[in-house]
Length: 418
Image (cartoon, rainbow, N blue to C red; front, top):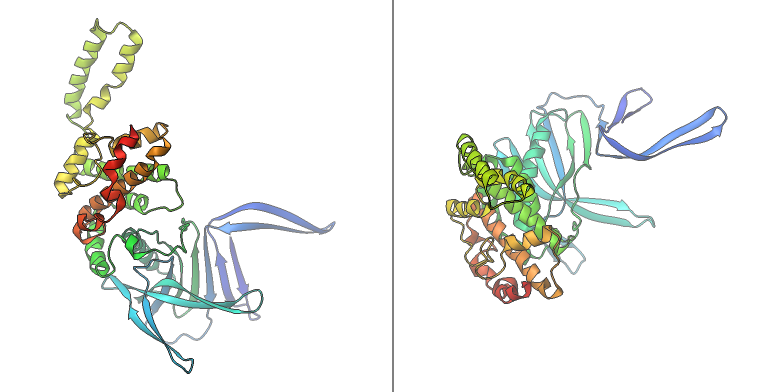
């Protein structure tokens, strides 16, 4: 969809562009036998509104100023101290702000962007939204650098979401150069359902005092990760969803765990036990043994067993998981075991029961909640290890978890799964 608005001098004042529009409504109004008005109502996946300034250009250095619009995140949010005077005057003093430098040319300053409007009864309503302000020298609104800046910001927001245990996304931006003022709306993104939920600081994974150092440390590691696209997807599974059921949340978290282990398998060549050519010889020998076996009388059973032979060469998940923990020195000995059932049901067994349709009784509901929390803590320790941040400086350290009920009492719930 493309459109423009011109002034009386036929100069373009505004252009409106959307590359993709979804619509379920297309109707036609009939005003007379030869006068019709077709119209449709559409939802743009992306929308760009460009205001053309049409003023004389001065010979100054080209510069692009802009603000990315961001959903709330307490760790990125600036803080202020307000002082109220007996005269009614209110003095606002900045108490804390966060800036993050990507490189020598790109710096994000996280600020509150104040806005106001008149509601339906004429009252003035003011509010603020979180923005990441930026400046690009020598660039204009037509430069591709703004999209590259958005890619970097998305990674910053993903790591901040992980640290705050609350999803945070960019929904668009506004930007100025010497010729144009642009508003870009991004609607092809999932907006967090808990966007207005206050996030208690006790729920944060990283404390506010450690957050700037955390971001400086982990952003570099994250950018250098060998399968960064896959890691981004994994991280999105980890950030809590407060609208989901316990069962779905548990299975989603376990999927994230499997993704992490799969990345590690591929990095360290731990997918298969034997080289393919060598295993093919072993496979033929086993196949011959099955075919000639007198212990298996049913031909159908022999066929089904031969279908499973390829799985013999794949390193078990438990072995790959143990190798991961050794490589990254991740200590999980105090948490609910992922694979071992020595103390009772393991997290893997709970996952298998859930995905294969088994129903847990009402008495195991508390245990399932505890298991979900242990699975989250396990994954968070693993991700922190990959990113080079000590778990002892987070809310998944032994010292911090010891006050949590799921940590103190999980062993009491094991018998309820029997």
